Image 1 (cartoon, rainbow, N blue to C red):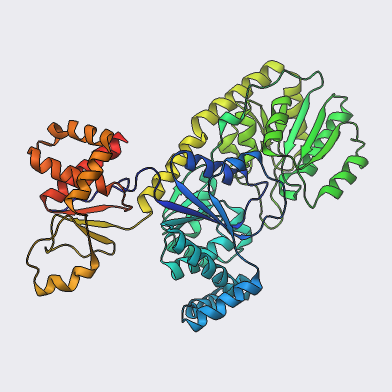
Image 2 (cartoon, one colour):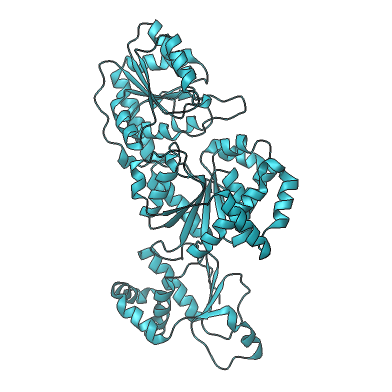
Length: 528
């Protein structure tokens, strides 16, 4: 008799250990990563963070102080080369995989470097007891994940955005397909990116989970300003459309429409934007505020009247797929003016919680801003509609719960629970635990004894039962639901209480007592 239990029967209280692997962490603009991990920790997930490269800025968002996960950085390359030499001496270096990737994907993929980084984190993950690791972005970190899995045997998953695999991987679709094939599952952050990914990787196990927003960080909006104020936030890159926004501001000024505009962010386009501000004589209306913390951005959102982000597609196809700052503006109950590009229409519904212009159309953008400037009640209604949509679709508690459910399903290995040993049981790649030994084992059973773990002595199980008084009382109260005899139920309950500490993706129960213990485990999860 065997029971295949759902993947949620795994360690309670977040005892499954999940690592996040990044190319670089933290990155000031990638607030969604921090928001996601904090939400998972609040739900009891035990996290670690691995960063291949150190951060490029010393600025930290205040919320990072709440992150419990330890952050491990790879050592400098001269040190990692020593690791490589040691691995070759110990015959642990994945030479065949490096060679295959060099030949298949070219030297620009830097397969040897990916293997070197993976070697370091494979050791750290093994020592840290990591059950599963997750990668944001299907690019360099995703490539490293293939090697890390090969070296450690630890499964992984990927969140793919769009620019990562569209631009940074370029036309290397074969590498993207290998990443997705090796991953337990792939998360797409928008329906737009899901369709793109499915077209390239039709065999991939793709799940659509939006980046979530912590609505608690955003309070009630401030009072309208006497002079309408536009806020825009993002790295100063071409794809953010700041040139177009400044062109729209110039049109508003020519129409003698009063306004102020603040652009928060830093990047390689700063000098060009400063020159455009001077050329268009916008020095009195537009200010470049530089990089600000998450908390300060929330304050600026509360104080503005309209949020604008004029996203465009760059010549190489790069674009902002699902800008987190638009979600933040919605959470702050501000109307949004943006463009009909990538996943933005999945957030902003034209005429409902903002307006959408064609990418690059400064005139349409200026018209939308002018309409909102002239109608405070419309601004209020659209802002409230945006907040409602954020609550309905993008609440991080719900998006992270979907991600946690995927981790629960895919992290860890199968567990086979035997009522007693020796006995016949199905082949499994996971652990095998026997509730108790039986005598005498035959020759065949003796050969498998080293592959089996046993539950502890009944005295130990009884001590655990007495220690966990609350659980014991609850389990005792369920007996009538199972229709089991008192002695049999008590024995199975002792097994179940102990097994709640184990990590497994699903459970095979062999024998009636093991089946009863598995059913009690399921009930425990429902009541947790």
